[in-house]
Image (cartoon, rainbow, N blue to C red; front, side, top):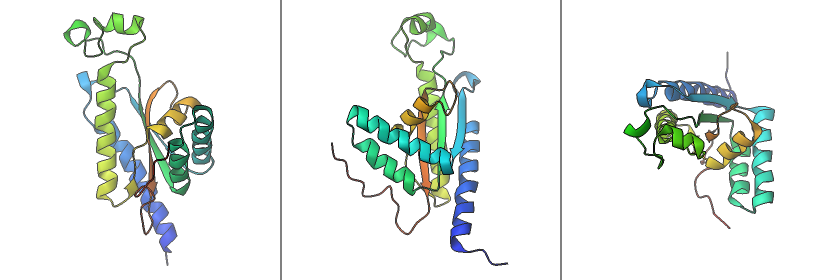
Length: 179
């Protein structure tokens, strides 16, 4: 059997994406409570994500959403990692959210810092694994914002998207930012 390079590269990206989801799941979590979710987008779902990124750019006038959408178009898959924004219930012991306990955080529509920290650790674990596998990747809040708008991770609002690519030169390098 002969496996052509494109087929092997696509399989490597999908294997890496699956392993990234596992890395995010097994990353340490505050209070031992897992409020993360992951997904892998390809094909039409990936295209819908980049279209939403362009729609956001039209509304907000932020051209870097278009730049990032072009990167998503060039990727073989996008890994989404997201977290709930519900407080952990450690109350006044923490208050890192800036509110006087979890009740005030909820009442004032605040965000639990623990979820942001967990998300950051999980994303770092996932992209480190992708880099170890020599899969080009880039962490994008823009893809996360579009994924949230599309409801791609259900009720998760804190989302990052990580497009994955295998090519002679990373599409995520030498990116220009024009505002």
